[in-house]
Image (cartoon, rainbow, N blue to C red):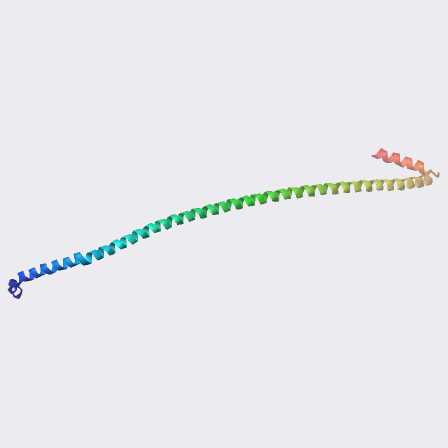
Length: 164
C-alpha cells in the first residue's frame, strides 16, 4: 500500500506538526488571545453598564408611574370633592328657591283668600241690598203695605244671621 510506504517520513511530519502547532499556540497566546479577551471584557463591562442603567431607568419609570398614579388619585379625590361641593350648593340653592316659592305661594294664597272674602262680603252686601228690595216689593204686593227700607234691611239681616 502506498500509504504505508511513506512511514519513514512520518516522524518528520509529526515533528514539524508539533513545532507548527506550538508556534501557532504561542502567537495566539501572546497576540490574539489578549485582544479577544480584552474585547470580551469590554463587551461584558458594556453589558453590565447597560444592565445597571436599565435598572436605574426601571426605578425612575416606577417612580414616575407612582407619581402619576398619585396625581390621578389626587385629581379624582379633588374632582369628587368639587362634585360633592357643587351638589351641596345646588341642594342649598334648590332649598332656598323652594322656600322662596313656598313664601310666594303663601302670599298669593293670602291675597286670593282676601279677594275671595272681599268678593263674598260684596256679594252678601249685593244680595242683602237686592233682598231688601225684593222683600219690600214682595211685601207691597202680598200685603199691599209699603215697608220702610230700614225695616226691610233689619229683617233681611236677621234672616241672614239665622242661616249662618
